[in-house]
Every structure is written in C-alpha cells, then in structure tokens.
Length: 92
Figure (tube, rainbow, N blue to C red):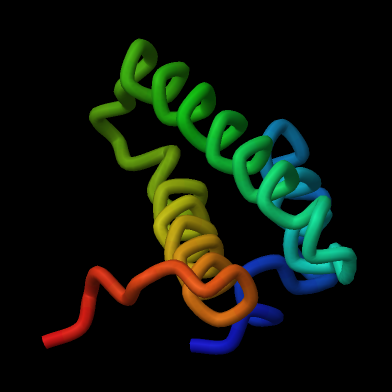
C-alpha cells in the first residue's frame, strides 16, 4: 500500500472529520512538524472511532468509512516507519 492511496481525491471530502488530518500528515514535508501532524491525525481517527462505536449501525452503513479508517491507520504507521524512523511493529 502506498501512502497516497489512503486519501484519494475521490474520497477526500467523504469523511472530513478525520481525513483532512491524515492528508495534512501525508503532505507534511517538514520532519519537525510531521510527528505533530501524525499525532493530530491519530487523535481525529480515535475520536471518530469513538463516535462510530456509540452509533454502531447494524446495517453496515459505516462500512466504507471503517475501511477508510483502517487504511488511514496503516498510512500513519507507514509514515512513522518510513519518514520518522519508528520501528516496524508489523515486521514478521
């Protein structure tokens, strides 16, 4: 998965409560600001997951957003590994 796949132009406005934060992290070129952007995106994702948990839909209405959230979490993991030098916790 490439980082650019997570927030594509076609889905950029679908979930603005958290996608804009993820996109800002992906676009951040300043290494000194990147960690803060990643943290902000993680907080936005966490908050959205909390909201979804409270309004758990039994009909799968949030399925697309749940998939996008999972992709965003993976993108942030890759940003931390590749651009911030974090260890690869998914390494086998």
